[in-house]
Length: 452
Image (cartoon, rainbow, N blue to C red; front, side, top):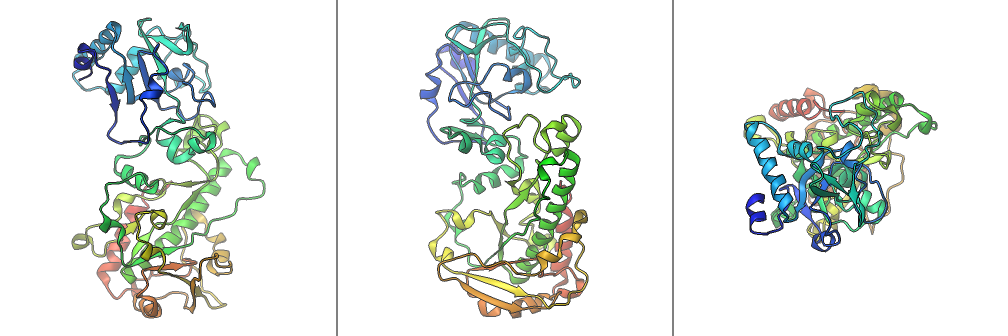
């Protein structure tokens, strides 16, 4: 397609199907007529804090991402695209088109030797281009000095890590043009867009839900010497904190099934990036951050797919029993959610007896932190005339007990629990419907199988 457009003197612009445009990029592209190629990158940090192109050395450290790209119609550009296609055909279509694109562009681009697979190389090595364009030093000659390339700024043409994890456009106050949902598994892209209120395909019925359940998530407080902890110590605390949150999430999932309500996912707090093992093994200096992401703030509100396997939610009821229905954590903030739902919220505090038996074990050895989370002592958040109910409850409730206890509030569209640490439905005896318990047990295993 690009060859055909170039031959009719068109200006092909490519966009991945998992990208959302927020404003017209053509005025920005027009600012750099010297560039034959303007392309996004997988860089995890900007090289400048202005609205100009990135430094060319980014091409040496990260892949250029053809998910967002513009090609200008020139003779050499046509020759490059021809070579690109021939390279793919020569390898029988078994190679990634983006990989071959990057390999061709880097031919004779740098003064120093470039080897993408040289893992002994330091991450911060500086790659110096052989030649840049006189009018703009951020545009570099590539592919044997025949085409010019400019790398689009990551804060404005954001990849998945820059937008969803770092939210760099907010820190730099950059005019965001596009969000590309890479750095994300294919099945989770829609959920990420829903969380960011960028998914507009859902019908009104998606937002008009009668029975919802939400809750306040409790997290562990970091140690006083957090900034002095090394990477391995930070990872250990991160996993303990995730374990504490997953226990509450599991309790909430059981309650949602017992009450036949749709669970509004909580916001998880992460003290390490999903790929923390890179900083542990490759470059410890980044201390739990994605390697290269020097602007990444820790801790941060992490996407749900970094903690649980969302593909196991909304399971088939006829095949596995009770489905765990859910909505994204920003559901109540979405302008498409009816105001009638937002106004019909009852906040419920469950009071535990003074003497508690041994708690249900929490994953990742976080049980020593549970007592402070099992008692509701935090003052309720201020709301406009909230309905607050304090209900005494035993340590382990059954499915029927929970339904009966909350029956007086069943007509409210949203039940908001101030603490899920005390709603335990893990016991087989607690379920009236064995099929519900069996499906939840299977679902829990699949949901948490990839926790990191």
